[in-house]
Length: 411
Image (cartoon, rainbow, N blue to C red; front, side, top):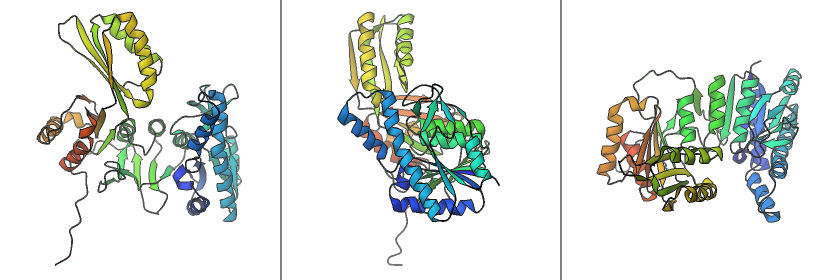
């Protein structure tokens, strides 16, 4: 039979009752497919484990943190296997290392190098359901590692690729991929199908449905993915290899308000300075969302960077050291910055889309700080006070919200 991978996130198995509900979903799929299950830690278990480590030390060693955090998924796989046994299904639980998920040596943010899937294949031949810990593996030096944020999604897609799976189903707490976050913006539309490229762009720009690393694996191995709600039985959103079969149009909007803007004031205009600053930041793992410097004829210019907010301390520490060498006048910083991204295959090929965005934002008196574009997105940076208004304005402009239900009273 064909193989289907089913991945359950923490909210989907947060209680014993939800674990039993997940087991019933697995039982239904097992009637038609060989099933491999990947699970996260229950509920907020990983955050609770991190909090416990902080009660001991503010700077735990990465190796010991990995050893601690991997216990969360081990609890999940054991309990879910018991639930499947209760339904008279033969299940067997595995850690990441037991199924041969081989990673590099980076603790807390490892990358998968190889999947030695012979134990899973053996279990499938015996008609068992392998239940695998997401988020973890074993390094080439035989150390337990974790895969960082979104690691369980990455595990599920890596196993899908290794087993040539028919489908990877990601169970979460929403009905699929929407034109914006349905928790924050009620009334947005569900997207029935979306391309790997559009999903990757959404994920990179702030959408939380599927981690970018998992998107990249799905796209590389063309694994069909469905995002489903674990709390109902409705069909979700399919992520697949869609061709460009219609004229470019905005498909979804996403945003990020966890950003940090830092500006080096009056940097001497010398080519090696810009190179030195960028090189220092990128070599230390800083993710540059945007950077800009003036192009006037002046001998000095202001150089601005936008990075994720959680990298603020690292960025400021690095830049403070650099500016002493470069004789920069001062550093300005703010967290009052956010981004709104309009996503769609080939949208920058349609000049009308960009002009429509600026026209509608201007009419709404929204000031734009900066804009970047790509084949898949138009990314607008602005102050946080404009965030909600910008999103509502663009959702309405591009018809990405459902029409409001009319009241029948009085008819």
